[in-house]
Length: 336
Image (cartoon, rainbow, N blue to C red):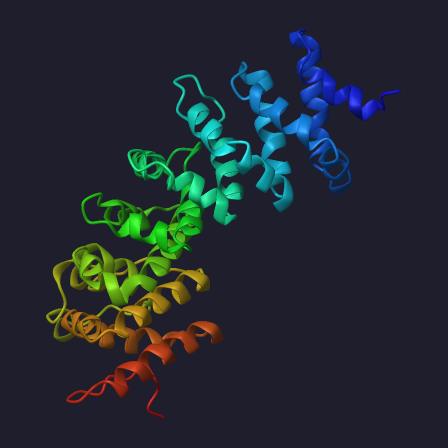
């Protein structure tokens, strides 16, 4: 005899829209608790395909279905099953339907699924040479087109997807490909007022800098956007004098000549400094940093930094620069 839960799961495929809607609402509620998730996990072979089919239903059904899938995908075993059954493709197809009203939820589902290497490979479309990178290009375009100024910003979580895919070499290479120009588009979102977007951009840049040894030239091709994104968050609050700004490119010098909003999130400051460090491991990277008066910016920023982890990140860059400097000795440490 079928249990109540088995019956409920079966109702997700009911021919009656009213029954289906009632069932999906209950399932969504169950996914909101750990006990509910564990119970539903036992019926994953039925639940996951049923919910995925409902993503193309009207919003009153597809919305709860998408929310349930987001909650279920927080379980790594269930997320792996979703990736295996082609959930990335289903999410992308539904995300870009003209009448899709579940954009935010579908993007959050992709965030969870790309925490797995298999999910990243699926989003990168590594198996299909002709389609490779198409999904990522679409997501980057949407991320850069939508505005964080509006109350509804369905694509702001794309920043987290980009952080996830840039943890793998294949993802970093795609983002750094100069022909596609994706990283250049992404970096420009660092000016966003959305903390989520800012952190996504910062984490993505930092991850991409792990390729500095082989891809430094591609990173420096976008230096007019790269250096402000890396150095402004760690420049401190001081208004710089003309002596300092005259040795900087316009995009840095003009920003540092006026009062500006500080980057209050220490994680973003650490990520920026880690990226500078990775670039500075290369001789050409250090030269590029000196050419924009970067060591002076790091010195000034360090003087007013209070967070211990951020200070440690400054010191790591500073010791690298000092160790590799023949003629000048930059310092990010107090002389006292």
